[in-house]
Length: 120
Length: 507
Image (cartoon, rainbow over all chains, first blue to last red; front, top):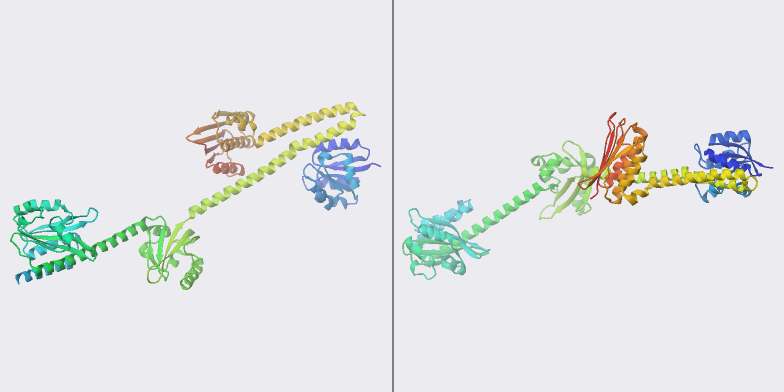
């Protein structure tokens, strides 16, 4: 059963490319995209995804602040944080915020996301 | 008897002169006249020691009216006697009075011819002396033969002592006067305010700079309590307590150091002052001297310098943040895309080669864009052509790329110190960026020239003007220029275009 996934990032090209990569992978089904925090919360309520792939740096908030809000909504989705900045210290910050894990953007793949989810 | 009377007359006459004369320059002349008349002598001369040359030189000559003695007077004034030579010289050397009965007969009298021509026959001479020794000699000449007289000789010795002491005392007084004058002149010409107070805190001295700085005339300040005059009301309590504590305990906390405090002018205005206090150690109750300097200007300059440094550091931090953002939003983002694209190429290679190939084309395009952005980014940090080729090629490239097009009117060919070239480049870059963003101009010119050891950089445009010289961008350039001991000037009247001009030393 493919996991239903929501992509949240303000870079449109990135969202498009990641969508293509994940659509090639059987584990995931991309059900929606959002470009900022407010839109992400709305999309999560509407689409009820299993996984939210969430960029740390958003125009209106940060992934760390948004994670608790996403995980406690009705959807109770799992969050995987990502960023082109940051390093291994983001792993701890991500878990403290309640996310499943953190994957640096240049390592992103279906397998990497699956790996981050598996740690829980 | 007669001689005794002569001696008394001479003694009284000289005592009178000493008591009444207050012009020491005329002392010798008056003494000679008084003694000459008292002793029936027709000519006298006073000699004083010239310590440097170790001779006696003539200080004064007196003739009784009607004496024809010009050659004698002339030769007397012109001579200087070493110890032992001539009449004054022998008296100087022996320290005893001398008496010549017949001048023509004396083996040690160089002026014999002139004396004979003047009709002078006898002479007596006695030393003037003080506690320190013989100062000089006084000689008196008579046309009549005179026989040595012990009483007269004793009197002359005593007169010699009186005259000597008088001269020495007058010299000491003059020396003190001159020293006072010198001190006063030093105080008056001092740049610092010098204020002296007594142990009650009352002003004893108040020099000219103090008058000018604090706004009181010295005569109005002297005798007043210093604290009332120059210490701000809010600080008087503390000043008073400190002063009292020092007087009681000898506590030296504030003495001999420079401190910065607030002073007050006659009009009540307060200003920063640098102060050093010393204690004057003379017998009697203590006195204190304060040396004060108005440091308003210095404080203002320090504050400006601190402000400028802070701005430079903040600008550097801001610059770093901007660079990080630019990297992140530009090249880094492209590399993330590249990563995903190559991932797609690999996953599609086996099953959908055509899609893989077109994705690979996209990847190549993305890489080219990323490389271009990195190059641009590097050039923004420090263009390679500036380091390699100097201002000429670097500014050519900059003006070619700018919009509206900018003309590089002049640029020196020679290389300059790296900091100078970098500052000039970035001033031009920033000015051109401002023109592109705000000026709505149709043309811009850039002029760079070396003039009299300074590099002059001017960027002008014909746009709408109204640039704010205090805006952070232009102020950052002004700070950069100031850090290199240069200056920046912005002229930008509304509707009249803008000129940004900078001078920095480059010699």
